[in-house]
Image (cartoon, rainbow, N blue to C red):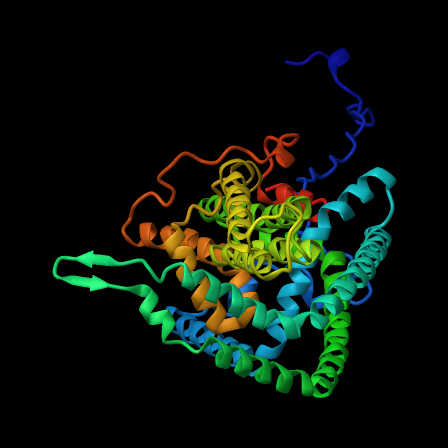
Length: 467
């Protein structure tokens, strides 16, 4: 039983505890959104198209599917046929364009050197070098032209007596053979009897009449020479303009060549082929220019000391003919010997035949010194061609492109041999280059990790990105 004092009054309520604040809802953090991939866009420069901007590879494949093997083969054949037709139709432009390229190639080292030394723009360097080139070539041409014109006039005046004197010299020599007899078993050969049957006076008269008729048409010749001179001046101006543009755009051409091969293996092959091709053309073109100048000086000095008439013209002819392999030296030697044989007297008082033999010996000695001393040090073995191959190449080049084809036959054949050897070994699954890689070009020694782009940039006077 509960006691009266223990009862709780009805109005007394149980004390209430303060209510807890409502719990805040737990917010789960939303996953962070990945930023949208940004496509790097190249700034569109003036003159460029927005279509040049890089796009995704997948998007490119969807918009422009790659060509199949058959399509590539058809397109390649069509391009080759079209290129052959263009060359055949406009072959008259081939010679000036090749000459312009050769001049730009020879001038380029001076342009690059002037750029490095003066830190001026390439265009200004090209204009300065070409201005100096025209000044030197023009001055030398005027000086040589005056000297050659003077000696040519003297030779032209003496020409009517030239052929009779030649006939007399031959007759005098053949008379000394009159008593000679060659015995071959039962047969006896008398060479003097053959020459005795020739009427030398009639022969000299006929040659003189022919020469007079030729001289009578000198007016027509002068007209043809004037026409040819005007045409030559126009061609020279065209070659000069094209050469200046090629020299200015040399760095761009070098970068274009270096970007043709992108796959690493083929890029190495391209570097090797371009390196050896440049070595071939560099050794031939610049080497032949140096050889021509050296031979011109040596031949002119030697013939002047011997007392041969028109020594300057003969030296200039020998120097120019250095660009004609194999055949050129023989022509220069023959011209010097004929001039020594037919000139009226000599300072040494020798007979014409003895004097001509001495001149022949001197010219042969000069050629031997050239082949044994000058050629190995100036040209080297960059061409690596048999003389018979060079001779056949000269004849083929002459039939295809005239004098220019004969001059450029040797480096063209060497380049064809280089590329043909590479293709042949690739077709037989052999190493494309059997020998060790060539030594680095001295121009690339400062950048040991650079490839053909840097070498081409140095050769063409531009900075190129490394591979």
